[in-house]
Image (cartoon, rainbow, N blue to C red; front, side, top):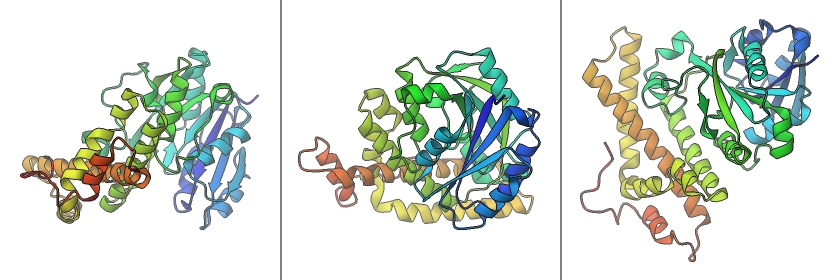
Amino acid sequence: MLEISAILTTRNRASLLPIVLEGLKRQCLPSEYFEIVAIDDGSSDETAVILDRARAELPLRVLRQNHAGLAAAKNLGIFGSRAPIVVFLDDDDVADPRLLRAHVLAHKKYPEPEVAVLGYTELAPEVGKVPLMRHVTQVGCQLFSYGWIKPGMTLDYTCFWGGRSSCKRGLLVEHGIFNPVFGFGCEDIELGWRLAQSRFRVIYEPAAMATMIRTLGFKDFCGRSERQGRSQWRLAQLHPAPAVRKYCEIDEGLALWADNMGRFLEFLVWAEKLDRLANVREAAGRPLDARSQETLDQVYRTAFKLSRAKGIAQAAHDQVDDGNAEHGMLERCRFGYERRRPGASVPS
């Protein structure tokens, strides 16, 4: 009897998929109790071939769609799943052998329909040595943050993190699925917000562990942060509650971009040089001293915050009109360099 459906969304990750699928082959949960529903979101590499080959060794079904984004891919997985529990997996994470069983046991312990489960993700050793990856998971926590969470802790909708969470399929069928307007970022939090109106909550279960095996570069993460900012604007427009607007950093982001857009590119060039230096030193076995590390972390934090602010401001400007109450602020975002307040500078 199926107990859990693992929904694996993927796009152009043929280089990583064999390792990810190998992790799913090693699950402690007997194969008759789980299925893998892989969603190929319009890949143009060898993804389809790799998934087709894996069917011989895994309880795997493959669904394909034209590229439509992460939310749409997850929805297709939900509709194609058959188990009462669904867990969402990322295509750059390798599941620990206990992952699926840990999710099932957690849901048996908390059988209420409105309870979801958050698993734990660590970095592969070689990934964790990269200065940027260390920062975004341990210091700035722009990617994910576990340091403040205790096992069994009850969390709110903001911890319904995509790629490492599970929930009851019936809850989604009854109360709503992912909003397909979110091609990247915030699709999980937006759904969590809607589900929160039905007493939705998240329980942390660190035994449901996975390991991230992909390293992100500085430019990659700046681009990711900018796309995240666009999604934050969209989320705040869909749900104009003050708590959502604050979570999405809308007012802070608009003001930050208006004050700093004129020097943004120059700052990124400098930040990228520091990132490159840190990588060279790490590779040579000569990591930065404490003071230099502190400087680097602040530079990372500022670069990614400004990139999110840029995404927020651009998304806002795309839909602004003369009747918008925020028109004045958005005009400052458009012409921010010329109209920057005297003495304004890149935030520290």
